Length: 163
Image (cartoon, rainbow, N blue to C red; front, top):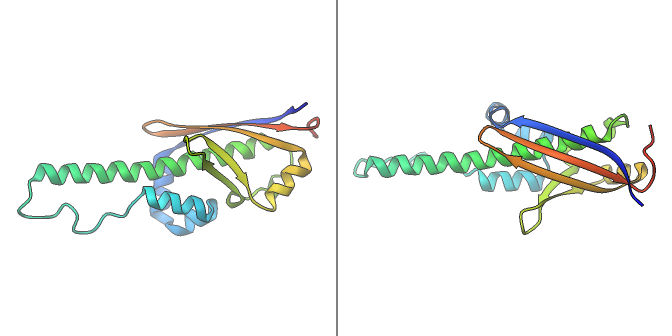
C-alpha cells in the first residue's frame, strides 16, 4: 500500500518567466528546462519574421489580426514555460525536508500524454534519488489563466516518509 510522501504547489506569474527569457534568452531556458521542453517551447513560441504584417498595400485590419495571432502564439509558449516551472517547484516543495540539492530542474521533465494530461519523467540522477526515497508515483496537475500558471503535485511512497 502506498503512503503519502508529500504535497507541493506553486503559482507563477507568466510575465515573470517571459521577462526572464527576454533578459537572458537560451541561457535562462537551459538553466531550468531540458532539451525536450525547450524544443516544445520554441514550437509554441515562433519568432515572427521582421517583415510579417508589413505591407503597404495590405489592409491594416489584417495586419492587426496577424499581430494578435502572434501575440497569442507567443503567450502560449510562455504559459507552457510557466506551467513547467510551477510543476518543478511543486515537486521541489513536495520533497519536504529531504536533500533538495540532489534535484536539478533539467532532470525533471514535465511532458504531456496524447490527451494533454501532464506527467513527470525523471532523468538520472534524480530518478535514482526518488527511488532511494521510496517515491514510486507522482500525481501532477497544471493549470493556466490569463496571468498565472499553477501546479499541484502529490508524491506517493511505498514506505513511510523519512524525516
